[in-house]
Length: 474
Image 1 (cartoon, rainbow, N blue to C red):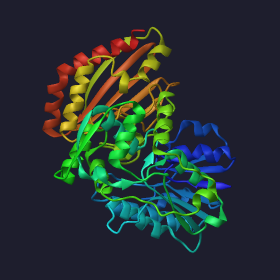
Image 2 (tube, helix red, strand yellow; image 1 turned 45 degrees about the vertical axis):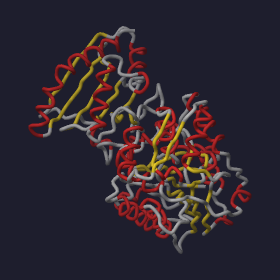
Image 3 (cartoon, rainbow, N blue to C red; image 1 turned 90 degrees about the vertical axis):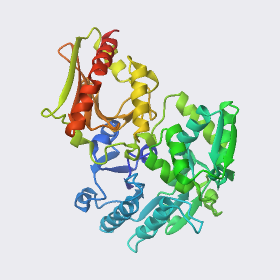
Image 4 (cartoon, rainbow, N blue to C red; image 1 turned 45 degrees about the horizontal axis):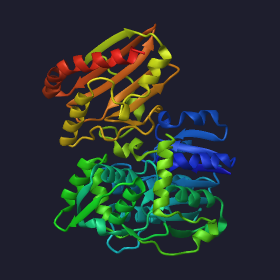
């Protein structure tokens, strides 16, 4: 079969594509920017990458007509509560209009459980997308999931931050809200096994785990899996805004995303029973099993995808990455340093391991202080870390940077700053002519940008000198 996967660089899409390719389907991955596509796809004859931005109908002509099945996995094109509903509506409308011109027979959509009368804005938007996608030209199969638990999922990482950082929590009352968490492996099984199933045409199913748990119970069970003792006191006086700040300062989420989560977490997410488990032979795992399996992946350094690498976690970037690859030359301040390289392979490996738990090799406390300052001013800080300790791909989050270019063969890594700045910043590492060339570029915005550069100049001299020395010291 020819299968279109939208949201191909997202948390679910990146995990679903290999499953479809292993079944010898021809997989068409629709991405807004080819630079973000997994570079291994180029070596797989069963995978084809196309550029298609569902906010721009003129780009959708790249979608081939001979499609049998399409997955709609586009969610939250913006983390701004002001516009995500209209953006999701536009994406779904443009998707439907283009797919109705093709030979597609089945569209599979991953939505959220929407059984309550008072829904959050995000869940209401998911329900609206369901209605938009339905068509007389093709059949729809809709799976509505609750909290998804897996290595790299937003819910998993937020719970992990709370449990591992706070022995005692004074928490908001929404921790008593009930939900039915579902392992990401089970989500993928439902999606994967539904391909071409005519008995699922024009059907909608709630998919959920075997337990009904409150968020508080999820935190406590998570702590049990990790062998930690935790104490939680819920209080009724914490407003949604205070709750959002609580999540924002303790976890790796942005404030806007924290606000959206708080909005959704006040809604009970309980699924309606059906025969979908027996139809697709899926027996959902318990919450503790899901958490344990997630940590197996973490310990093996084999996390396939993470919400942190999504543009939803971005502090600055919203559009295509290629717009930022060409580092500006004029109207900028630069800090350039070079050192002879003793062992290029070892230096490149150190560069590819920079950030996250490995730190920045020099002046770690100064990097942390900069992260705390960024967090205080509403930025993302250092808490995103990195998904894989030794591997970097275009689009990956790296502390408060975003990977714009990464090619070990060309021996070059380019990062774009997503921290709060009165301007824009790039950090480039490349080995050329036996030298490691390290360039920090800052394009200031107005007077404040220029004052900022001169204010941090003494620290740059210390940090960047120390960092390049450590990188070549092998």
